[in-house]
Image (cartoon, rainbow, N blue to C red; front, side, top):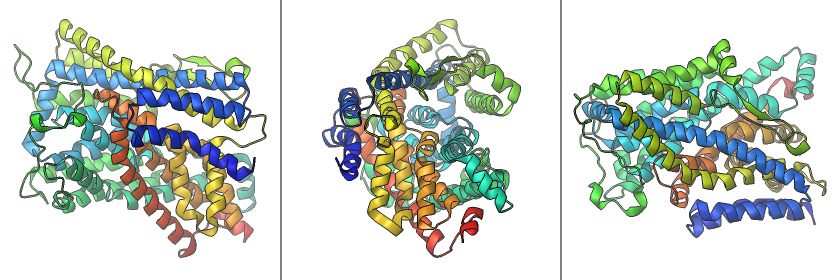
Length: 567
């Protein structure tokens, strides 16, 4: 077969998933086993991937599945704990003291708070925490999941304290060779990586300013009583205010402090500015926007999670501050676990590892139950039980409810993530072919020529759609993007930055992120409905980033030390 035909074949697992989930509207629990089996057959027959490597990849995927299920479980357990302690009622009452307008709540609770969680944690935790929080505030399950997933865009490149850049970009390119070339020009790898970081921060800031507005317009257009875009435009000034309050400190932190803190700093500064401003009515709409009464919500919107807002029987109503304490604890614990070396090492020391699974080089897995966000959330839950003085029976009920919810997500992810690992690990094969994700990227690059920068973010998004991770997308495709830039005589740093930005945007449509977020609110089975809503903002983000890429390369003539060396 020709390389073009093989590249087109590489796309077919994703095409099949799209047809089943979006076109035929099948539940992921039905669609993903089919896609997994098709991917395995494609790997064995077309790529001639060794059977043992397929099995090893699947086992690697199962280990990752356990890690993700642990995160989902923690998020559900936290919500159920707050439901039984009375914390959710307190949080809800606190928001009503600011505003009952659902559009404003999205900007504060989903966008700004979600950006902080992403900066501290990553691993898809943002949607898993933000979505049930929105349900607790009175949102239907489907818009809550859509909003939670859309937050996984701008802050993601600096999520988990900068992991997508520090690990993804550094591990995705040939660092030693680049460092040697840089040294010949009197530059260092650290300077090069900081240039990439600064460019990622600036591109994200430009794209991210409008994200709160896009969240709100998606909310009003698809989930409003009148389904009007115009209801989103009514809060455009406040949305831009919320976007700028995050994006400006976010960009400055990326430029001057490096990749570890932009998302956290942007979110904290944003919350400190926006919440007091909202309390004072600054740029607030004259008329509040609400969902239709719950009895009028379509069945598609509804999840199995039920939250009653009555105060816990026999207990005095909880203060708003006390209700928010668990989320504050979670934020502090996440930061400490990532930034304090002795704590980080202690948590990571508890691990189940399997290197070179079944003897296959480069295929390894590890489960770190305490270091993973799921472990941190469980610790926060245990502290909450004491702080909120919960009855033991209520804590047991929260545990029981959470355990039952997690079982459905497990079945779907058991097929989804192993499928992803087979795709990623297909580069070792008997047909002498590149891996399927790289084959897809090559097809795009070969087809567009000099305008490739317009499509570079989409390639990054494709990697994230497949892998469900900005970091993994960068590991897979950063070197590919680097080589394309060299071939076109363009700045490699800026091209890698476009890769990282696109990979962040792709998190909005990554299938296992959708499944994970849906599981936290009991919405499994409607993944296609969610994807149809998040495709639009993903397209916007990649297109705008691509246009910025064209402007940067061909109008601003952006350069870097490596390009200057070759000039």
